[in-house]
Amino acid sequence: MREYELVCIFEPNQEKAEQLTDDIQAILSSHNISVTETEKWGLRKMAYYIKKHLDGFYVLFHFSTDPEKIHPLEKELRLREDILRFLTIRKN
Image (cartoon, rainbow, N blue to C red):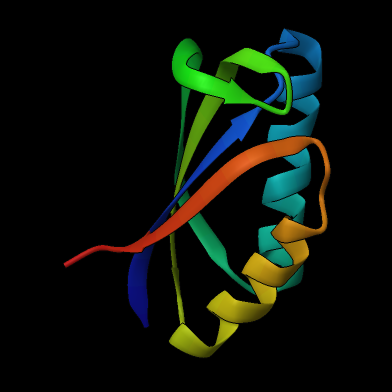
């Protein structure tokens, strides 16, 4: 098992961001991925517009999983229209 970080940028609506955080945790658990920590960075300005938004709500997920589960997870996250951007990084 390897450790990963997943950074998601949601639309700037606070209530919707809280719901999306719960949805992402549910998606991770549906893929049998154990989340060790969730950091809500809050509302931040972005350098450029993404889907007509200049602000975004940032959330960081720390989790451990096998490498072959990352591709199906990213595929499912790509289908979500309410996620502006996401990035999965393997920790050393």
